[in-house]
Amino acid sequence: MVVVEVAVRILLVEDHPQLAASVSQALKNAGWTVDLLHDGVAADLALGSEDYALAILDVGLPRMDGFEVLARLRARGKTVPVLMLTARGEVKDRVHGLNLGADDYLAKPFELSELEARVKALLRRSVLGGEQQLRCGDLVYDLDTRRFTLLDENLNLTSREQAVLEAMIARPGRVMSKEQLASQVFGLDEEASADSIEIYVHRLRKKLERGSVRIVTFRGLGYLLEATSG
Image (tube, rainbow, N blue to C red; front, side, top):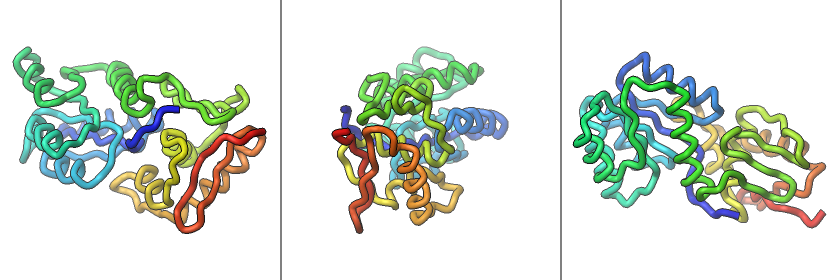
């Protein structure tokens, strides 16, 4: 198992309304929790207070450009992967961003399919430690398809159940509080309900009960996903 310390949320920072909406929707359709912001100052504040699996930063942001946001992020010692979006095609701009600590670069205009492929590649390294799959007992999670299988059969999950289970399988052997799970299931524009996590966990337990994996409750602490002996 790969032990990681990242969330499953993505931060998207893009000031062009139509592009921001289309990219955000594409990422949400792929099943990720997405926080959408439109300026660099807001992005800097979010990156300083929230945990993300990935940040997608436009270079030409108002109030604070993407390069400055990236520089401040790395100066704080944060290692969250960053994908830069830019209309600037010059090599010097790409080199500047990479030298500041960007993990990848995508020039506009781009196809959403290419963006999604790059996002998956970055998440594979950060969330799965370079692995294609995570396993816990009979439960298998594949990053490329974003599907869970149990006993080699697809597990039918709602988007919220999916987000909870993704967060838990990415942290094998770690107890996660309801508040931690809620912060990764709900975006900034949603009301994060810790109590609702109990409902999702209850549903997941029923869906997992036929396999050699279970969700254990630690009263006052949270939940842990673990493999059982059979």
